[in-house]
Image 1 (cartoon, rainbow, N blue to C red):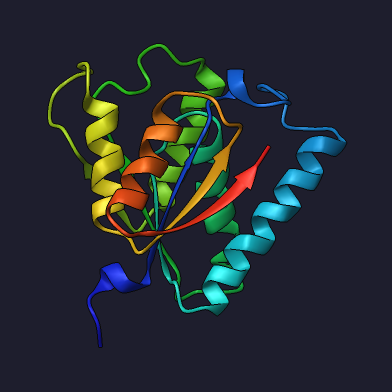
Image 2: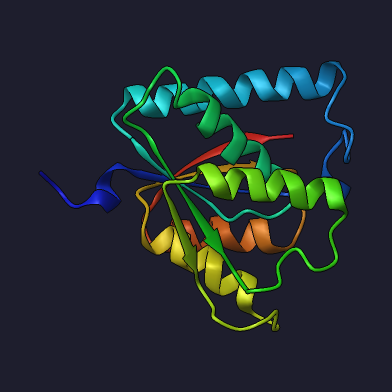
Length: 168
């Protein structure tokens, strides 16, 4: 059997402020997006991916982590790893976002801190590189803008990781 990286998929995507639905995960556009994402993840499971890594940021990372946890009910062999960039990632988040985050962590198969310190400039990039360095597939939800999502996609291409782009 090949190493776990061969069967690992990670996620990247935008924060709520850069998503068409923002923090309000409802409405037709979000419903259509979520169904497309679910289909893509199910296809990756069918293709043999069973280990998934979420960076646990607000927005796409949290949505993907929750989707993996729901899919585990029908696919008990899949695993979720939460890659956390710093000790105080949720420090400025609202209570409901922190509760959602903590629920995911409580159900995750593995939690990895890519830094043992509080937030510093570059900790998110270090987390993103960890996810790509330990994956064979990146599912990216991308609107074309500059930022961490674009950098993560570019890093994946540079490292010859398969990329599935879901444009929003």
